[in-house]
Image 1 (cartoon, rainbow, N blue to C red):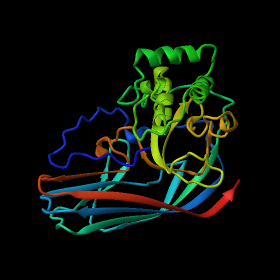
Image 2 (image 1 turned 90 degrees about the vertical axis):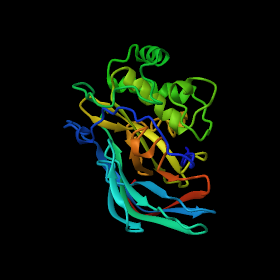
Image 3 (image 1 turned 120 degrees about the vertical axis):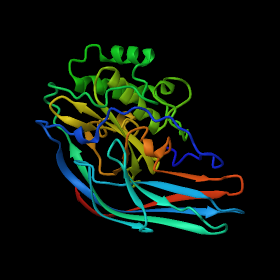
Image 4 (image 1 turned 60 degrees about the vertical axis):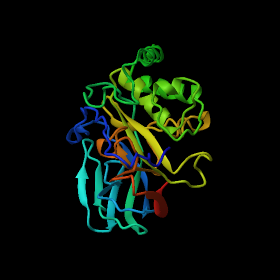
Length: 328
């Protein structure tokens, strides 16, 4: 999972913002079988970003956007948040993601700037009753987009093949989930090559596992969402898991949004653990595979100009401490 993408710093970036049909205000319609909370974890999360101007000049303009961990029910609740420096603008995007936008213009050569954000966040462990899986569906989160090629003929054909004989949405998505676990070979690549690329020989990490499951679901008209976040790595976590992680949730009839993680559930022994079960080691940072504010990056993005006489280097790190646990 990549942490950020470097952008050319010598010119103003021009980027394509995809049309979004995912209004943040209509994400959670009433459902009849809400998830059951069987436990929770409380974390202290620390993020530190360092901006160093290697000179010899200073920027005329410089902005940093940092995605903020926020309350996303029923998955997590942010109890406290402290941002340093305190001079920032709060920005919200089309998915409801929030960002601290910093203006670091006139950053002197040779000087280092530090951004630190501290959170206290509670993450729920959730299970779902899938005994009833029929009813109405949503219209949001069903369209193709960059990296989610649900209109691609190869994706459509595969989704139709895997859905044969599956009577409910729950069964269809489980077929997609099992196929991904059985057929994809995990290879960390540091990029999101998208759903179709996951079907080829390029290998796949959490971004492709997630993109493919979402694309297969959307190809059958099943709403599915993309999350980017943090994975708390403890003794029970898969040995090749990364702190920076991506996973989906899918909308099931009469149940609502249901969590799953096709990457961690790729092996048969872990398959059931990560289907219709939100494990409390997942901390959501952003929703959406292509949030417009991040301009193709993940977690944060940085722009400055001019770049012909200025070199600004940005590095970041996370620290997660488990401070309390309840339940299983």
